[in-house]
Length: 294
Length: 291
Image (spheres, rainbow over the protein chains, first blue to last red):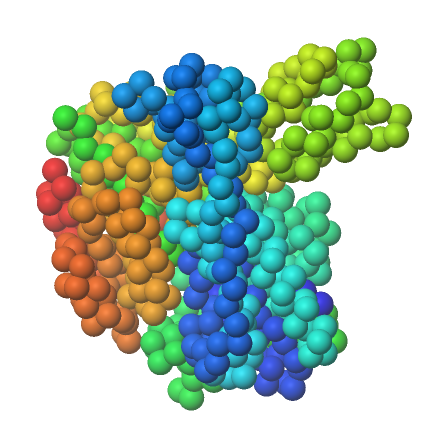
């Protein structure tokens, strides 16, 4: 069973929820594999206490970029005119490739009259599997800075997690999705059974959640809501719940202890001096486990 | 002389939009300013100023999509073969099935078709809203159509297609999305000054490192670390100080305060509503240092 934690807006507490949910399931004796699908800013392993063992790391080379052979180029500018992605710029009258914008689609090479354009494979990122300090396997997608094809990298990380789950008999896969509603989030949602939307009581977060649910519609996930930091704006929290109209799993109050737990590289649920968010968080997870997962 | 300032930082929810909005408001008193909301997946500038934007132009950003003329099609299958995203399939009848969500809009299918059976159709990728914010500055808000997978392409268009326009301003403030992908590259590509907004947590620090790696990869020198929510107990202050010192960056601090959160939720500016607060003064110092 695949559980995705997403939000639309950044910083609402996705990693907080996914790391602690993973830890919670593990502490019940359930086998669980975690996936860090926030490939642009991966933090899940850190939130789960850091790595005690790196099982493997694999470089992924799945992106393509155009290369122009200026010895052959006749400066006809057909490539410049054809590219739809701003990936060809002019420099001293010669076309040059902006690597970060290049989709590797090949349109420029189709129109080039002098066969001056070829394609090379470039690094997409890294997929790692680590065992966290708490004995949980974490698969991390880590995108090359300035890179693209994030969705593909996330998809590969999820496939890897399913492979591990199958071989180890793990029942649950928890996916910590990226902020936003773009390619990596869409890949996180594809094939997922449950979507936990983490929202904080602000109009910005509400808007992000609505856009996320719009995207999630075609994936037929079972959608559940966690209202994080709800006490910072209780009235708005009620509005969030009624506007989104999805089942509320729990309301978590703002708690400084969460920062302290992070600082000591300990999941909040394992942090000995757990604060006021502890009980509501455990109750949310118990509701999820008893009512949905089991 | 135009100064492009990009507000980014890696992690989400650290306060990029809060900084961008307050900073651009202050800069607008010193020179002609435009604020660009480049977080197209979830643009938050409008909510952060409670919708106080007068929109005077909406540009529908269109991308390519193929239109098939079966009267001309010779069923050669070249379009299917050359589609880099595998968004086309040919049925035995010769009919082409098009998966729009996979299509990047590159137009390779149209370019390779030997029978001129594919022509240019359009689909909506997103919107650029042009207007005036808070009566003091111009604004552009980019917003992608939900379900579109190519936010990076839309952000690149938002920046590159408005670059000429930017030259008319003294200050261009770009509110970047979280992360470190190609779309974030677009927002820093032309910037003189980078603000890396972070929060004093191990996650904030971890993402800050990756973001700085991105900014330095592209030769950015004027990188300023802005620590928001400064003062929360148990924060990773030493780590941030170490990064800043090691790399010779400038450090700014915005103290943690309920006033900031409440202002963001209500859509008012801290620097406008609570100019005497420590948070407002810290953003004032930032504006002064950048102008």
